[in-house]
Image (cartoon, rainbow over all chains, first blue to last red):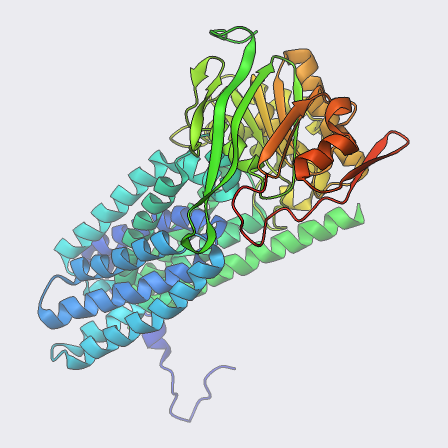
Length: 291
Length: 279
């Protein structure tokens, strides 16, 4: 299935991969790579709890409202990073307060998500500025993020990481066995709300790097892949962070070599890791059954 | 054996004048479930709490855990007022199956009893591993300690929850329907573990159940809550047609079949036509 010679190719592979001046590009975009690395690691760790608390759909809802916030900031001339954080936090806290049960939560997300997306598209349609900015909020383009904003994204991810590590054990207990956790004195409601705030923050970061439509490959897929091959309390988060790191940094490094946005590379790597983990799990199960 | 020692006599649990009200339906004011409950539970005592659903049994346990306030009265555990997160209380919930893809090993469920309430990362401290191993052995789960919980049977999963609750041998064990959804063999197994805990480590047991038969041979006293009132006594005293008929205010029969008991004719638990205090 290679592009046929003779006919004008629809696809110029030079857009996908081209390693001219690669070293210089990498140096130029060192900050973007660092931001991607931090997001990959923290996103993978947050993803462990997204999976355990059954929040994958909520992640999507939060990201659409984050997009609406960023689009509003773009239109009204505020900071796009602040706008995305504002939108994400509003959505995350709403979902955390109103949707303690999975079914309630899903209906809240289902109502919020299209509203957020609609608002965002409205703001973008009204926006008269550079069109590259519009597109990048939905599908991500880290190279278009300014250096001070990158600093903010890295800083926010670091804060999320620190707080997540602090509440790790009680959050894990509450995610896995809420009834026993409460009986044992874990402040389950507070811990759950703090986690929703962390989730909102990291989703807002991800919107800038990979785009509002595509936050899942960094916030859900790495953890889901890790859970297929590991079960230990340290093995799962370490693997999830590693998978997130490889997807994010690998995607950015590959994207530098072409002219395409970074997102398809990240989603592809992340998906490939998941498939490999799935195959590993299946083959292990087959081995066990034959023993 | 208890650290600190109980201040008041030998009671592990001391309930005085406890009352429970629930908000009535349709804003019709509060409905009193029961009041004037006094209960002392000694070390090593096994008390079954029986009664129809909706009679406030689970709420009683939650009040002892400090998660919910009584409408009136006081509760002391080892002489001290209740508070959240009392590590001297073990809590065994009803068995709810873990989903098949839960990324958790059997030993991790037990370890949550040690690490869960602590802040920080799940990095074992010195001694943690031994405590977890001991708890796994206590509940007969050592041979499947490294398997995923999703692959285990309901009985195997429930043993892990018991192990988590028995961590460090609590002075008081609160069990909320721990045998439901288990088959007969596992009901006996889990009962045996709980009973051994009270014989060997002096734990007081408060055991909420809808079926007294699996624990009938172990129970010292029964607290039977029904119809806004309660009855406290030995199984022979409480489980009689006359007593339960009086309690429910409707004809109830206790039938004996071998060493099993069948209670027939229990009226609907929740009064659908709210008429205040049924008793």
